[in-house]
Length: 290
Ligand SMILES: CC(C)(COP(=O)(O)OP(=O)(O)OC[C@H]1O[C@@H](n2cnc3c(N)ncnc32)[C@H](O)[C@@H]1OP(=O)(O)O)[C@@H](O)C(=O)NCCC(=O)NCCS
Image (cartoon, rainbow, N blue to C red):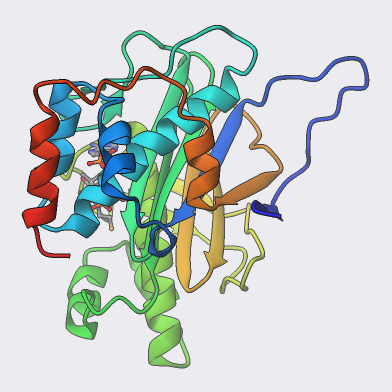
């Protein structure tokens, strides 16, 4: 079976008709994706010129593919959440002044993308005025030295600092730090804030001091300027990555989809135009370092 599912909530059950899902959380392991040039041309050509240029502006092939996978996962989520409706999948995105992408023609579809370590992930919610955000971080990323953890932790709230300091090992400190980092990012990304928010203005309170592999934690609470905020979080320690998801209106579906590339490619219906004048741009992909 291609799709691995992990349970993290109660599935909404209705015995009379099948409800369309309201949320979709999909993750793809980028190490398993090595598209051929022909596939790459077809997949890029699903998007408008601006998006293709944006993806290809990244320095490495890896980063370009992460961007492309993010857009494809958004289309995958869109096709799942609007299953049965004759809607064409998104080909271009608008971005807020802080850089958060959105679809102006689908105000009842919210989504957020994260890329880190081996994974690209997308969380999407169907509903007007809903918010959603996610962040994923590799636990042992070499890009996060201990000195940086110590420096950034000092900007967290006092409660968060003592939560981190109350650790028995350097690994536990790192895991707790990354957990708070992902939670903050998932909330800030859900709200669409930029980097302007002081990191100690939001603070988390934990009922589970540590995450356990593959077991979702759903009861972490957030306080902003001392006031409890009514949003929900799901945290998961998965394949050496920490994932945090934030949403407000709807209970999440019962599972995280860990997709193999073949699966999210299956949902990419749309008109490909490999003869478009921007297609030669795709050649620049092969001039980049891996
Ligand atoms: C821009 C920002 C959201 C990127 O986050 P990141 O962790 O570096 O990277 P991620 O891969 O998780 O997320 C990148 C994706 O977030 C989305 N994004 C960009 N700006 C966003 C914003 N203001 N709000 C929500 N989502 C945003 C984009 O889809 C982007 O992917 P894309 O470029 O492929 O479209 C981040 O730098 C930021 O502003 N964070 C919030 C502030 C902060 O202080 N965080 C520290 C927490 S301890």
